[in-house]
Image 1: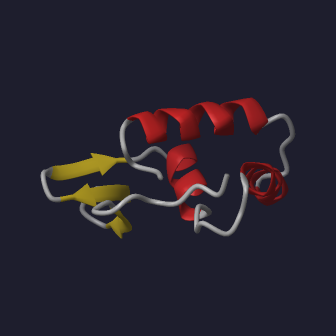
Image 2: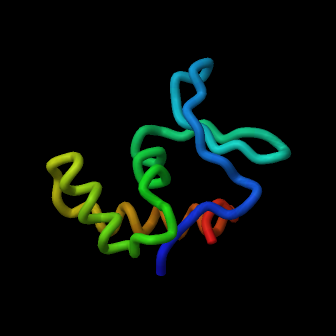
Length: 82
């Protein structure tokens, strides 16, 4: 499973919000830093274990797998990810 954004969602930095946001035709979702970091790494080429490994390396952390999988499941339920 290689998560990537569904159309018509678009991830971008929004200076006015001082945060990354997900834009879609009906509006915008302001993301917290954790959500943004996960979505920034979802390019459709990495599977979830690779995504988790990248996050753990980037943030010098361990044990992020359950949280990342829970976020991805929620994002899929909201239609953000394929």
